Length: 234
Image (cartoon, rainbow, N blue to C red; front, side, top):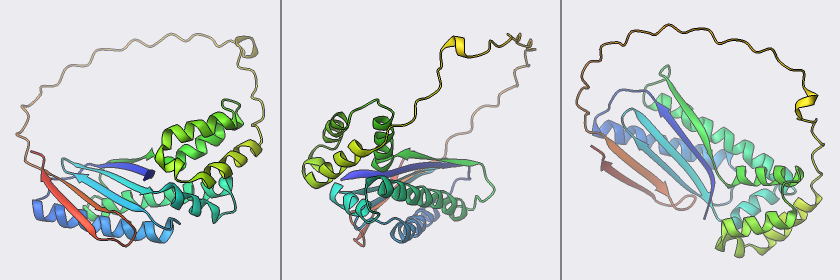
């Protein structure tokens, strides 16, 4: 399977006891799985959520076969429109995961951040950008996909043919303005302000790290059985 969407998040939060941590994490998985089913137009997929304490660190992944991804893209009339649509859906469900995690762990106003780490739907978008910018030919792009996806690509010859046609027809990006030094007006050099050294604060000894847990929750296919693995980290 291909990692279609991956995301990670971090929330500054207190430490939870084992049962609460498991319950909140499992509830978060169920809620996210509902978001994915409702808003990400994939005919089949595997979904994984990993959450670790100290504070709350999470990683989410949605995977699918190349064939399932091709069917999803085809629902929108072609690779360009299909990749764009699924990328927007992916952005929505990853944002929903972060927002829901803050609610589940009682951290609506707590500090935190999230990141769309990547995934093949983002890779396909960048592939089109590189071909349109003249960095790759369509043949080189297909060779790269075959090397990257391996057996998944070999199992989906129609996807590769359609992708190659779409890449070959993609209009090139307009040429960018020159970036040579003589194009730009020179900037005046501004001296750096002198910094006064700050006194080093007295550091209190670190408190002993409480034991915390890591949970992995996943379904191997849409609507399949949910599996949970809870392990002690420290």
